[in-house]
Length: 274
Image (cartoon, rainbow, N blue to C red):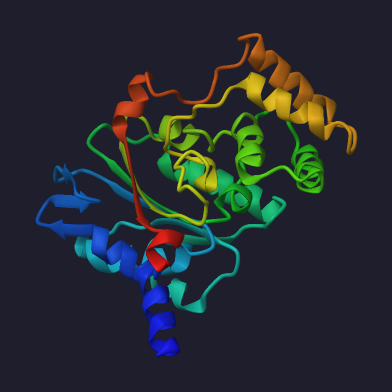
C-alpha cells in the first residue's frame, strides 16, 4: 500500500535508527561506521550533534554508547524537551537559514567542547542538514552582522548550496575541516545524514570534519557574481583577499596531517529513501 511505501521510505532515513545502525560500543571499543576506536581508561568521548536532525541522532548515540557517553553539545533548530533528559549535554537552538546570535553561541560552545583534547580522545560528530547556519564561528575580523548580510545576499543571488558553503567555509572556524583542526590531536568520527544531492561530504553542514577541495579564489569568484545583487561587506572581501594572497591559512586539505585523524560516513540519504 501507499502508506507502507511511505513508511519504508521514512524509516530508511530515520536519523535515530541510522545512528544506531552505524554506532556500536563494546568494552573500551567504539565502532563508528565500521571504523574501530580503542579507548584508554582516561579517554574522553565528546559527542557533537549539529543540524536539524541533531536531537534524534543524539538520542541514538547516547543509547548506543551507554556508559561511554560523556555528553557534549547538541545544536538544532528547535529544542526538544526530551533532550534535557540526556546527561552532560549542552542544548542550544541555532538560527536558520541565516546565522544569528543563537548560531554564534552554538559555535562558541562547540569550540569549547573540542579544544584541549588529547590524541587518545574521540569526538563523535553527528551531522545533518542546516548545520552550516545553525552554528557559526566567524573569523576574528568578521562580525556576525556582516555574515548575516552576506548570507542574505548569497540566498538572493540564487547561489546553490555548494557555492553558499564554499564561501562560508572560508569565513568560519568550524566549517571546511575547522572542527577537526580545533579538536586535533583527538580523532573525529562523523556520522552524516545527507540532504544534499550527490551526498558530497564537503557540502553537508559545510564539512566540519572533512578536507575541503575549494579555495579562497573559488570563494572570491562566487562573490563577483553576488556583487550584482548588493554590496559585499568590506571585512569579508578583505579576509578572502588576504586568504587568496596566502596571508590567511587555507581550509583543511586532504594532504594535511590533521586529515588523517578524521573519518566520515554517510548513514542515510535521499537515495536511501528513494
